[in-house]
Image (cartoon, rainbow, N blue to C red; front, side, top):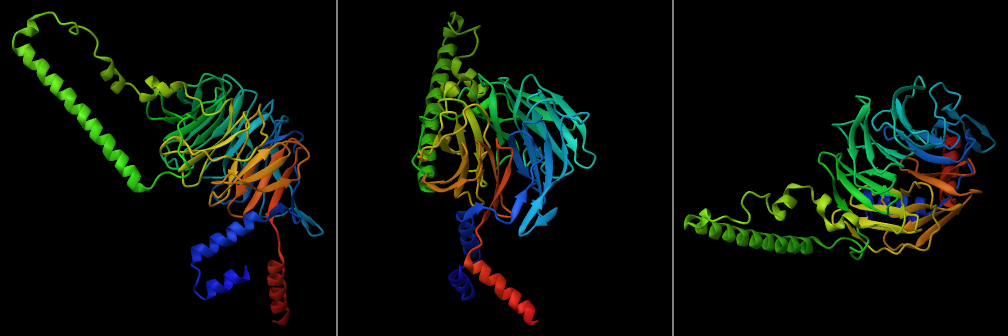
Length: 448
């Protein structure tokens, strides 16, 4: 670390490079925090964690005892020796007048304001809560257990909550009207995971128990892409030159096909003008040809890929990288897969053998530069290199299976929740350089 500081002072290292090195060093040294402890009020397994996107200060958790809690992770409630204790600011549970009756499977913040948060439950309800009054302001009744909810952090034109339930249809709930605005049909079994695109407010990604991952443009009917694990590319997408060459070749073939179609139309017109139009034609008075029908309908409805699968089992978790270029998926087949969003191809990154939950949704997390992937692996959390698939860290601290991971970009800390009812904090280790830095700062303050 001191070498990097000297290189930065000498101008040998650019500011961005220096910051990225410090961040990567901190992430690679994560360990169970010995100075920060979250006091969990939950009496059931912790299923969902999220830090607000506006301040990065308030942690929201949802648990199987039908309770949701909010913590201020930047201001400790009290201290016990060197350990700062963080108790919840408030919690809502079954005793609340409008609280959930069964397990809370998903708890998320309203993206642009900490004044609202959303909870989804196995009691078939989605509640929108006012943070200040802890009252339910909007309630949605769904046809089955709610597995996952999601809101787009990019949205400026809508206030939609995407809900994945045990029903085959994905529903979009509009907070402003209090009604369902969309119903997305295509999955053949329940939907365990939903995720909005990081590059468009209109694109929604869903993973179902039928093993399919579908992409939806909510402005159009039907899904426009189904990921197929047999369609693959090695590693990162090809360079720009390759893509432009492919696009040119496809455009040429498209123009050639258009030219042949145009020639056939002209020939048909000539035959009609020569008197053949008076003869009964086999195509007159009938519906248009199949080709034109395919052009009118959404390609996702008639494509041969409509029955493609992404996992041999339920898709239990989805996570889009920060740049929106790649998608991580976890399945009940205990496989992690990395997909290129642009091409829809499986990048064939071979993540080391993992053991994942098979019957409940998982919450994946990535580091700030998307270099590491954090995945719950039974009672442990494994950090995989995004592009090699090798496990660089194995974090052990929970006594039972881990359900959710959350990486805080602001504090560069990892938060995890599991069936042991605990919320653990994983912080960068305080090495000797940091201790020397602190001691030198104390000496300077003492001398002053």
